[in-house]
Amino acid sequence: MIGNIKDIRETDVKGKNVLLRCDLDVPLKEEGDKAVIADDTRLKSWLPTLEYLLSNQANLTIVGHLGRPNGRMENFSLRPVADWLASQLELHNEITPFSKNGFDGWKVEKNVFLLENLRFYKEEEENDKTFAEKLSKGCDLYVNDAFAVSHRNDASVVAITKFLPHFAGIRLQEEIKNLSAVITNPKRPLVVVIGGAKIETKLPMVEKMHKLADYVLVGGEIAEQDQVLMKVAHEKTEGVKSELLIGELLSNRKDITEDTIEKFLQTIYQAQTIVWNGPMGLFEEGFEKGTKDIAEGISKTSAFTVAGGGDTISFLKEHQILHKFAFVSMGGGAMLNFLAGENLPGLEALVD
Ligand code: 3PG
Image (tube, rainbow, N blue to C red; front, top):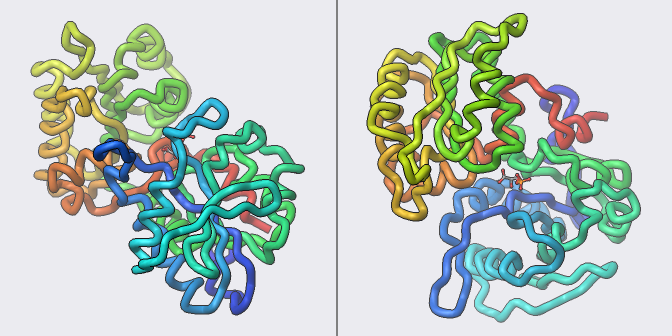
């Protein structure tokens, strides 16, 4: 039990049909004519829950989303995740297509099924109750092990809990425990670094973090929103104690400038706690200097360091810096929301 959320290990799962919501939102890359997983850190995060359930003889239907497709788009298919899962379970048989309650997917093992990307159905992001009920058919209980999507009001995260007894997976509990420790009396100065491209998710977070941190450093695509950010910086909101540093971008807008890197590093070197989400530039197009210098700078400090989010994780892993962080959260937006003290709909829904 964590707070009022039940731990899946507190109930008998033997012979039960479990609907397992996982973080399946991973970066893909082309290999020949095939899409393969570029970084499987998020997938590995829920393996302890999967192993626990399988060793206790549960039957699994794994569900999740990949990216932000607009309807059914084959390049957002979870087929590469089905292949990955088969290799993790050391299966040598071909995985086979399967369908249940109108959902298609794959049979990976006799008691392990994976459903196709739930965001192929608009009802998922509408938190549609009928959709959630259909998803629950034939299942006995629901486990959320997808912290990274717990800030979304999606059917497989929220509405589903109306139809099945619900529990937290092992990873979800670890996220709650570690991130709670960051907000309970953090060592200061507390520096939050926010970058990346999901403007509508991140902008409100800059404002919220402004209230928690001593310094908020903003780079990446959201630094382009300087008008909005300046407004946040100058608003004398009650309780705001931090300084907001808005990064300057190169003329091509693809990375932060050398001056910004230097200014950010000066602040980072004073920090006792550092939280980082989102790259400083378009590293996937080769504009990686800002992100790399900031990552290396953070990793050299003796501060308590936390990084989170799909792109951030995959960058740190590629540059062998990931292990230098004290805690790596699978969530980007979810981590920032949690640290800002917001109620996450997916966690609220698990509370009885
Ligand atoms: C993430 O990558 O942060 C999660 O998978 C949530 O994705 P979303 O921002 O598209 O809802």
